[in-house]
Image 1 (cartoon, rainbow, N blue to C red):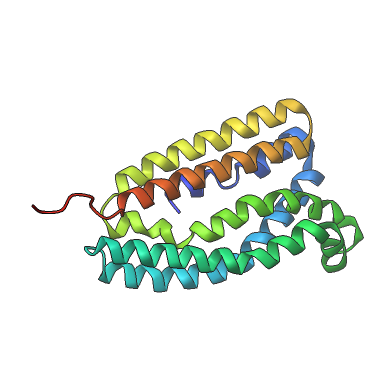
Image 2 (cartoon, rainbow, N blue to C red):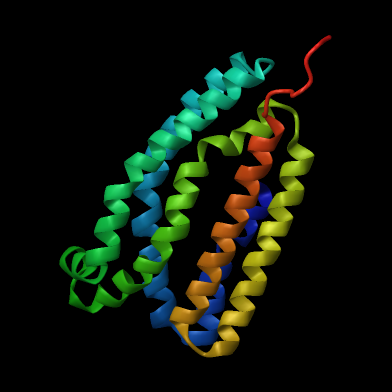
Length: 196
C-alpha cells in the first residue's frame, strides 16, 4: 500500500458522510472493517513470507513469476468461500453478528466483497515493485487508481444512491487493482529473447 492509498483510504466514508449522512457512512465503515480486518491479518502474514522469498529470487524472473502466480492462486482459492458467504448471506450475517439494525451493512458488504477479494489476492504482490526497484511506477499507478476511485465516488454521489455510489467505487477499486496486477506481471515476465 502506497502513501496515496493510505491518504485516499478514508475517502469513501467521507463522501458517504457528506452525501448520504452519518448513519449510512457508519454502515459503510462497519462493512469495510468487517471485510478488511480478517483478510489483512492473513494477507499481511502471506505478504511477509512472499517478500522474503521474492527478495531472494528477484533476479530469477521465471521463478519470481511462478512464486507470484502460485501465491495469488492460493489466495484466490482461500477467498472463494468467504466471498460466497458474504454474497449469499451478507445482511443475515451482519444482523446476527452486529444486531438487526446492521443488516444494511451486509448489503453494502455484498458489493464491497468484490474489491476486497481483489485486494486480498493482490496484497502480497504490492511488495514486488520494491523488490525489483520499480517504486516510481508503483506510485504512478497508485495515483491513477486514486483518481479512478475519487471520480467514481463523485459520479456515484451525483446519482443520489448509496448503492450506486458504492458500485462505482468497487468498479474503480477493482479496475485499479487489475491494472496494478497486470503491470506487475508484465514487469516479471521472462525475457522472450534468447541468445543465438
